Amino acid sequence: MTYDSATLEQLAKDADDIVSRYPVPRSALLPMLHLVQSVDGYVSPDGIAFCAKRLDLTSAEVSAVATFYTQYKRRPNGEYQVGVCTNTLCAVMGGDEIWRRVSERAGVGHDETTADGKITLERLECNAACDYAPVMMVNWEFFDNMTPESALQLVDDILDGKDVHPTRGADTVADFKSVSRVLAGFEDGRADEGGLAGEPTLAGLKVAKERGWTGESK
Amino acid sequence: MMANPHALIEGVAITSFAIRSNHSFIYLRGEVVHVYRRLLQAVREAYEAGHLGKNIHGSGFDLDVTVHAGAGAYICGEETALLDSLEGRRGQPRLKPPFPAVAGLYARPTVVNNVETVASVPSIIGNGVDWFTAMGTERSKGMGLFSLSGHVTKPGQYEAPLGITLRELLDMAGGIREGHELKFWTPGGSSTPIFTQDQLDTPLDYESVGAEGSMLGTRALQLFDDTTCVVRAVTRWTEFYKHESCGKCTPCREGTYWLTQILKRIEGGTGTQADIQQLLDTCDSIAGRSFCALGDGATSSIVSAVAKFHEEFEQHVALGACPFDHAASALFEYGAEEAVEEPVADAAAEPEAAVADEAAEEGEGHTPDDYDGTAAISALNEFARVNDPKTEKDA
Picture 1: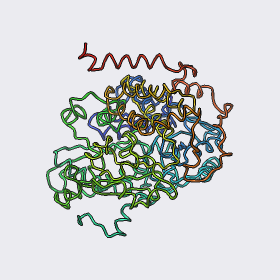
Picture 2 (picture 1 turned 135 degrees about the horizontal axis):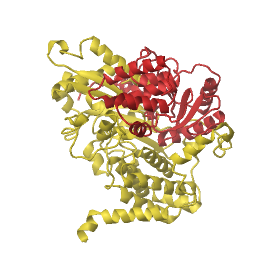
Picture 3 (picture 1 turned 135 degrees about the vertical axis):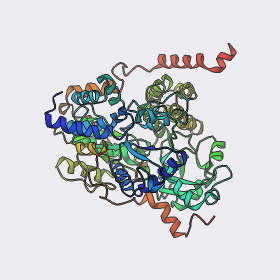
Picture 4 (picture 1 turned 60 degrees about the vertical axis):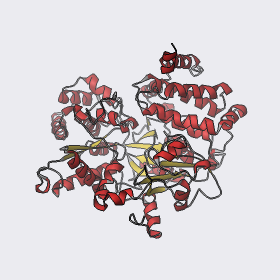
């Protein structure tokens, strides 16, 4: 391993915290892989060795897990993971056209990173926000009801180094490493940022209130 | 979970108390970071308020709750794959039995429930069983979230008693988008056989939807209007299942791969009439033979679409092209002249290794583009025939 002593010390401390959440240490592997990405920006050979040593596994066993899940990246990831949903519902509602334009603007295809390391582009599988279609995600924050114009603006802002603002999520999108640390189970103090539920989420409730329906009326 | 995570945590506490479990886990997909932030915070708040932890409110009952983020694998929605993932392994389904209630997480008795189910517990406890069972039908009791998306005026979540119809839901949601008609829809997400206008008045409960040949599933009602190409929709769903197939069993892993090849041929206008029958044959080799329900689900949209829109598949073959204007389906306007061919990524900006890796992942490294897969499909069908219980009986 090539981590310096300060990094290794912090990693070890965080790993202890993660392991303490579970009755059996191996359960800590998924969050520990997120933790490794928060330090290295991907699941590095060093990171695999670290997880293996801490959990008393072989590096092959850790690699087998790391390669199964799409959120674990096998080469240095861009600062922003930009996904365009091209599963059926979003694709038909315009996701295919958004993908075409975004890919053209960024100059990269699926699972490729821009030369400046800003954006890794992804054709997303369903992110369970079909009622907000077409959907994009940046570092796993929701950008709802997208159009080609709003999508290109989003890409331009990221490439220009500006903050970008999710429709539902934190006030600004944190970078890939910071978000990976949250996914390892470490709070970043931003849970209260952003609104509550979006309009489609409350659509049924709104109709019920307008029509005076309650659960007890039947 | 985003707006009111405490309802879920309350449900977790009540459920755990009921089954005398002292450790519960909330497994959240990793691709929704803000939801995870709020769940982490809500669980911490619940500990601080004494609703979780040791000797909760002097009851003598202890409960720890761990919120666990996944890492991008749809299959982890299958309960035993979820358990393997939670144990720090590849998320692949386990052989059942034993069922999780007998030997689940760490081989201990485990109850695995959907978040919607658990979150509904506090309201049922609060309002009483009679309140809950007064809603719904004789056999499908209670309420649930019906999620309407697609070509509908007001997409969103509509909580309603089981047994409501799509016509009634559309009345709340402002109908199909203006100037268009409903063409096809999924009653329970992409793994359930599609419906058409013929099922507008089918009560959306487990029995009635089943009697019409589909499943209520997740109640993800995806609605598509008359501008939508059903072949395009089905092809994309199949690509999803190919991507998410965990690789454990051969029928699903290989079958979804070849289904995608055939569907892309048909959609792209290079398919043959025989391809349509081949689709059904290959589906027959997967459904009922895959290790878990993912393989079955992958075939649902295909078999139902071919049955209900056979002529549309034939039209793609006869025309040698898709007869639909995809721009007409989009929710924004864009000109046909803008929709040129797929852009080619700037190869110069990419390291060679990245390109090579992608080819390997797509499985193109060992399959020439002009190979149509006939041999592999024949082998798969032969495998299915040999392993068919009926064949064994006859022999």
